[in-house]
Image (cartoon, rainbow, N blue to C red; front, side, top):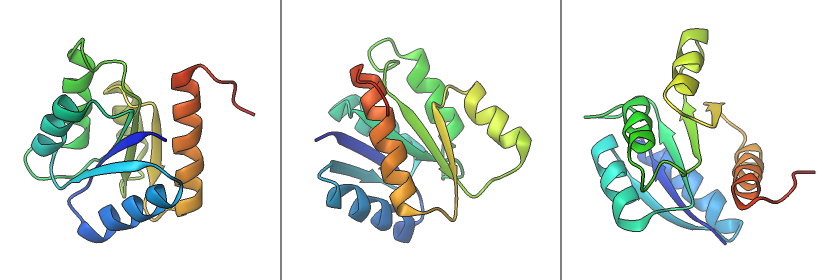
Length: 128
């Protein structure tokens, strides 16, 4: 399966996402801040990144913009996972280059399905 980067400063959320994705057969790299997320992306080149918006150092939006500016990583699908539900935040998430946006609290099964769909699209498989 895929290698997924999870960047969230809340260890409970990070652990839940890792648990759910590993149960689906994915391998995970989990970090707690934006700078560590960028470093892990450059080191591991994961198949997909899940970014929390509010993290110490760099926000998920900033990480996403940096990722999109890096020709070696710009292809990577990004799912923003956040408690922020304001319309302007959703707009900012997509403007920063995110491919999908999930609001906390979230259904772990829905998150798994969104991850699967994003990975399928990235691999060129049809989504049914």
